[in-house]
Amino acid sequence: MNGTVELTIPVRSDLLILARLTAAAMAGRAEFGIEDIEDLRLVVEELCLSVIGRNKTGAVHLHFTEDAGVITVGCSLWGEGDLDERGEDDPDDLSLRIIEALVDEYGEDMADGRRQAWIRKHRSKVAS
Amino acid sequence: MNGTVELTIPVRSDLLILARLTAAAMAGRAEFGIEDIEDLRLVVEELCLSVIGRNKTGAVHLHFTEDAGVITVGCSLWGEGDLDERGEDDPDDLSLRIIEALVDEYGEDMADGRRQAWIRKHRSKVAS
Amino acid sequence: MDLTFEIAEKRVDGVSVVTVTGEIDVATAPDLKECLVTQAAEGVSAIVVDLSGVSFIDSTALGVLVGAFRRQEEAGGTLKLVVTEPRILKVLEITALTSVFPVFASVEEAVGG
Amino acid sequence: MDLTFEIAEKRVDGVSVVTVTGEIDVATAPDLKECLVTQAAEGVSAIVVDLSGVSFIDSTALGVLVGAFRRQEEAGGTLKLVVTEPRILKVLEITALTSVFPVFASVEEAVGG
Ligand SMILES: Nc1ncnc2c1ncn2[C@@H]1O[C@H](COP(=O)(O)OP(=O)(O)O)[C@@H](O)[C@H]1O
Ligand SMILES: Nc1ncnc2c1ncn2[C@@H]1O[C@H](COP(=O)(O)OP(=O)(O)O)[C@@H](O)[C@H]1O
Image 1: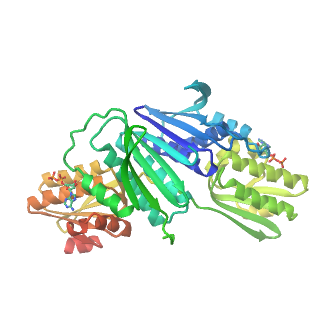
Image 2: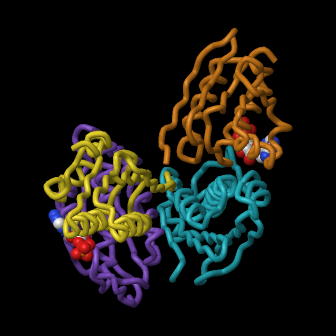
Image 3: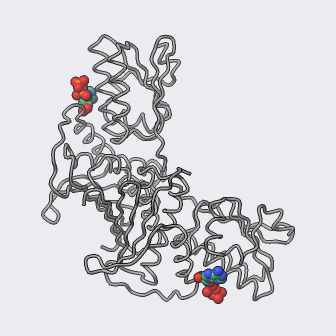
């Protein structure tokens, strides 16, 4: 628990900003440069969007750890999800391209019996 | 769970800003005025400080709910706390005065077998 | 933390210029979509979306822009972007969308070009 | 979200003016305390803490200011505050600290008064 920040937000679009704020604040405190912080803000948004998919109920659970200039963010879906009928504007492919381009590592694993997606980003050598 | 935001942060001073950011973002989304948002930011900081007291380990667990212009924030301490030797600059009395002045209701209760302190603030009639 | 988001519409030389300010994310992208869908329904043939004042753009917002771009193409119209922020340009580049959208450095160039 | 926090010190007519910028919270208050403790140890008799550029102040920060005020009093010195932000004045008022600190609207008034 020590050193880990956990955040649970309902699958309701207008609160995802909290995930971005948490990522930015942690990266800021860990002395990431502005460009790295902006990358992380976007990546965390895309991580949430990819985990949420078309679910319109339930909650997104995130955990953030920072250790020696490396931030890891894990994201999983809690609770049963009713599916949205979206379909149009499905940006999954875009999310993946963004994540691939901006993180050092990403993947999926099982944590507490739940599928979790995670990303990892190192602080750049020169603060940009 | 639905509609509730939960945040767990280690008892480490430089991350309390996350509690303030979460409070401000929720209040902003709920169309609280600037003065109300600033009040809530301060109150949530003081709520955390009063729950943390002299503990220097463990984690602070917060939950935020918003319903029809009323924001409720609960705060409890998770994990065993090693006590800090502070003593000087003990601002408990100041925390209490601030909380009393800026919220509509506050109190303590038991939640999940843990002592929790909570505050409640209504959106002002006229956005200030 | 800047929660202000605004969409303004104006006409410049017969071109519809949509100026977006703030963060376009999953919460605000629907507003942009509604604006662009309405313009398409009204048969607007030339649209310029000015993203100069945009500080954050996510995949939802990009999806809305791509959707609008396609609708314009199918209807024989155009949709151009104005991007000045390096940050926004970077996001368009990593998603390979700079090869989809005509991107300009100012509204004047987009309207004229 | 503004994470910048700065403390600057200067001398104005023999008075030590400490200018604080940003948010003084539990994370940054120790820096202010260190600055004020150092000044007391150096025997500085007149201190003005300029809070004009402070956007947030919590009880930890207020505790630091009260502690410094008392140290100055005991040593026969003074500590005055410059407050221009209504928000900061409000916090001083609800904690009844406006009756503890001499509060001024500008550095000139604090140094002269
Ligand atoms: N490089 C790309 N070029 C074009 N479209 C893309 C690209 N990458 C992803 N897309 C997808 O195209 C979608 C937009 O199409 P959509 O909104 O379904 O249009 P329509 O409904 O008008 O057919 C976006 O949501 C996006 O996921
Ligand atoms: N209205 C008040 N006036 C004076 N002191 C107050 C007031 N309210 C609270 N205090 C307490 O006084 C403390 C500052 O004293 P302290 O730092 O212990 O001084 P010292 O260690 O120099 O004796 C603050 O932390 C604060 O809790």
